[in-house]
Length: 160
Figure 1: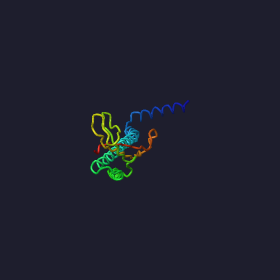
Figure 2: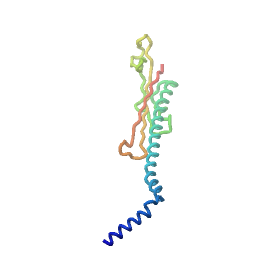
Figure 3: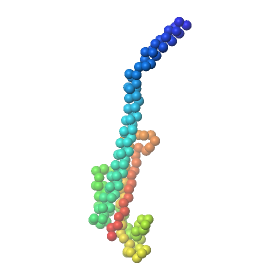
Figure 4: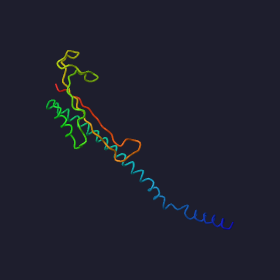
């Protein structure tokens, strides 16, 4: 019984002595919050880099279309323009650029035979579709999302 009282007194003494002490609280909060804040910073950076890669892929397909408008349709040259549009080495013209004839409608371009007449009496135009494809790998493994994404874009323009 005497040892029980001593341990109770000791517990009461320690509680009085350290119970109101707040000197280590900031360090504990810092230790808990820093990993969480670090994960948030890395995640936001990862999202930003993924968006930047998507912009690079979109810019590459647009550069291919601009090349076709300026120089005419040449699938190999357009593919080279797509690959050279950014400094990202993982972006390519995939699938290969396509040239086709069609008529512009309110919902897009409808395929038509070259030299044919569109509804409304206009001649079918010559169009190109340039696709670009790139990949993005996340900085860290998030367990709930894939580690790698394939980003594909497509641009269409009238050549004639």
